[in-house]
Length: 105
Image (cartoon, rainbow, N blue to C red; front, side, top):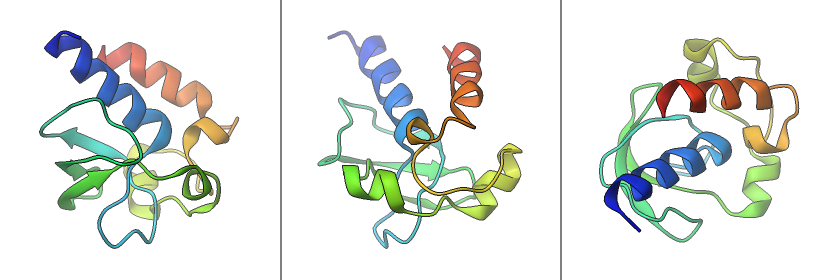
């Protein structure tokens, strides 16, 4: 897989699943992934969340993606409604993710 495809894949996974920081208390939107690779729920990369946390970011496992609260500050800054779980599990914000992916790719 080319470097460009790896970057695109990491960005797409992070947009749909959101990310966890090491504390793992809530899902965050990844503003930046510093070392993109084939992101999955067992890997991490340094990066920056939309709410300003510079941490190791990882893709949450399936149960976390379905049940964890989304970061209120990330949501506020992005202008999307509060909720629980990853965007791919919330029909109300799926159109927002689809539009964002078109914008950033």
